[in-house]
Image (spheres, rainbow, N blue to C red):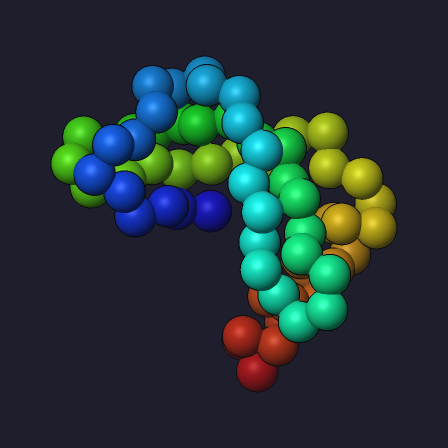
Length: 65
């Protein structure tokens, strides 16, 4: 996932992001990667529980249809 921010975190920074979706928010543990100063950063999901993984897949499927 790419986050648009003027203050990206250095690569390897661990954090948790909350995805506001229909229903309950999805809290996602992730690590920053491929940051672009002044533009944003990529986030890699890590240790993602199966339930959250499925909810994210469903959300992506809705956006792609």
